[in-house]
Image 1: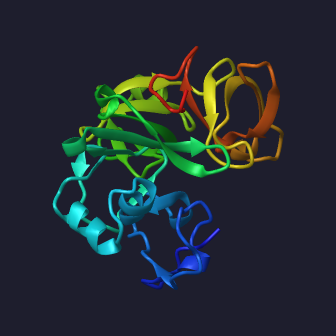
Image 2: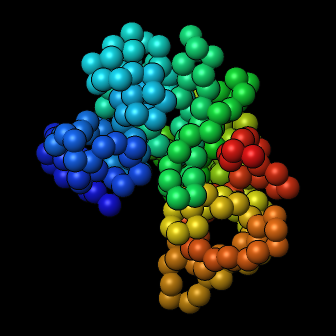
Length: 253
């Protein structure tokens, strides 16, 4: 996949394969701004408005729509047409009653599904890391670039913070970042594959095989889908989304 590099420009032939653009008709394409998602895991807002949703025929029309403040990403008005839209981001255009979520999608890698208006302020994120900050509180570093500080009442006994682990998921409210639900990573949980050849598949975690000398991110995870078919991927490629069913809509069904 394409790398960000230092250039402010991006050739269409070098753009990520899942962008729905014509590769040979024009030479250049908009390059995402540095932000919460890397280039190879996002789609610029202009391409979302023009090529994905079809609300504009040209880049100029798409820029006008975006600059008018009609497009929100995770509940925040975004006027930067290069803004990177990535996994689990919610794009809303209230004027036309449009609410969509970008999710891992089979064959397309990253694509949108329509969601009810009631879910427009909800988002699933994965805990990538956690660090101690001043005062003994814990900062959770999340998959979409966010940081949430968990306040600890007694730094000598940080029980509140120890409950959160890497690879757990959080259902948060956006844009406030209030934690609504914490979903632990583990056997028996429902998960969605966010990368690799099984991207977009959903299944129950049957086993997590953490082998000696191998980083936990590379642990082999066995999942079983609703039809009873088992498949495998690595821990770094999955996100837990609920217990018996997803806590929010993450697939077309």
